[in-house]
Length: 440
Ligand code: FAD
Image (tube, rainbow, N blue to C red):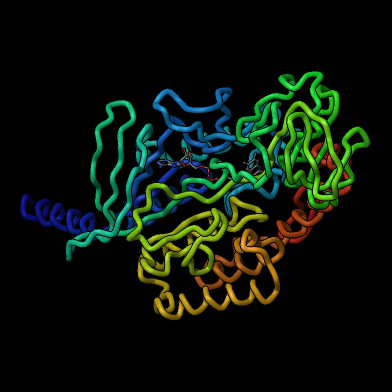
């Protein structure tokens, strides 16, 4: 009896020792789905290091701007009135839907609750180290040991710890470090300058003349919110294909500043009190040591990423969520399912040279097609083929639902044609192929 118990224990220890250890940085949408899959896989074990005290990443709304109580920049860039720009019916992970509710375009709190419930259902909290910031990741040079050394800092005690892992899933989010456009003489402007990262509520702009610079979903949403409060709202962008409400005037991008005004690319001068930069964000990985081999050009192009995710220099490292203009959560799920098959040895990647060649080929194509560097990771329509490719190779094609693309395209059109109203639309998914779309 004792012998067999002992044998069993030795066997269990062996299994545990053979498990691949996975480090996940960040407990946002990407990190949570990564941890779920790691926990469900008997060959893997892992944990998340999360610098805040909560799951949900940018969806955990925080009133405060600037730094948190530990001196770390507030991570969430959600604003008080934020509602999703995609219907929740297509936003969920591949096999974990948003709960039914009255609206398709839900507020940030409902998205946050989705993550809280998800984390509870899969008992993820057990393996999340909160208020623990990843400060360094580097390849471990000691032979016969796990490939990665990760240093974390416990923000409450300020103690640092070293950990060793076989693979790394980077999920630190890409909407926190602002991209600041080049505006000549910006310092001479005497009014206020904000980045949308620090925007929370429109009432602070009461009676002010505001220029909103940008053409993305945040610029459009925020301009619409401001109309009720500001005395003038100007959307300054290259081209707005959106049919904006009449009260919002559209001008070309501002290129230089004076004391009380800005000059646009087409030579107009616009007086204003506030410049609100909705100019987007840059990719930033302050914790990756240079020997990880990852570089970020102009904050917009990450090299060398095979399939826009796997570090070709060290293929046991993946960066999740780099492609943009996509339906994010299902794609995070696809990337992670694929990567876990790779690190388990069930899927073989091309050689390092082949991956680098593939990356260089994409770079050449981008140049030939005159695609700007900042759009290197922009996907749009190609996201669907990309997801299908990953799913085919990793064996989860049954989870890819064609209806998601159909709803995404329809919602995109509505966003262009009715930016002030589309968030009242309602979507019902009927089956894998069909849906019902009721316009407001
Ligand atoms: P995040 O949510 O940013 O999470 C990253 C986590 O990593 C955070 O918890 C952070 O604290 C942690 N972290 C970072 N650095 C460290 C470190 N060094 N150590 C430890 N932890 C760290 N997507 C949609 O699908 N629908 C929408 O409607 C939509 N609206 C959006 C609106 C706004 C304003 C923004 C900015 C984005 C929106 N998105 C939307 C895209 C959104 O980014 C994704 O939906 C998704 O939430 C990103 O998840 P993530 O896990 O990659 O990053």
